[in-house]
Image (tube, rainbow, N blue to C red; front, side):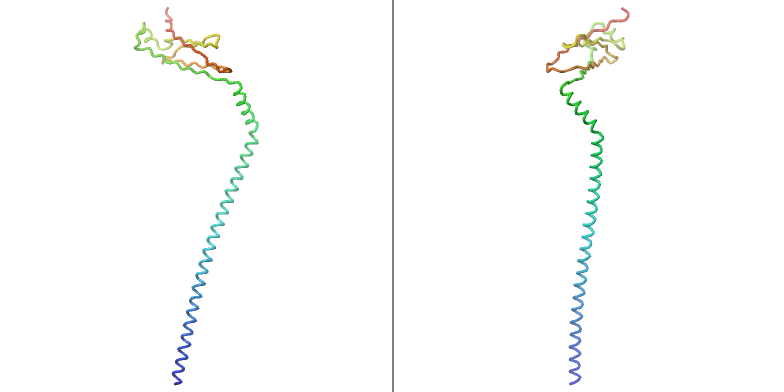
Length: 176
């Protein structure tokens, strides 16, 4: 009987020991889970710090660019002032360039003395451009491709349209 009660006590002690070990294991699991959460939180904090550092770098670069832009504006203020004056004056007093390109196609148009024209390499035609605003006409001679480019600078202070007239003459032969 004494042996039986000793075995019961031993069994009861083993059960308590087993129960304590289970509690200890459960506590260790909770501690491990807490450590994992702490590690995950530290990783998030590190990631947030990296983003903050990256944002600070971008802000610093933006401030440098803003400083260089303000420096550029300060150095180029007289130039910008002159440009604005030029734009304002250009609105008041408008000067335009007249550009007229003339290309003469004469082959196959039954022109008299076509053989004489074909024998010449340049200056086959004389051109005369006239305008109702000009006192004297502008003269020109065609090149070897039978083209000529008129370029003039005009003042357009009024809104009236100008009328131009172009006259084309066959160039005289130098032998005549």
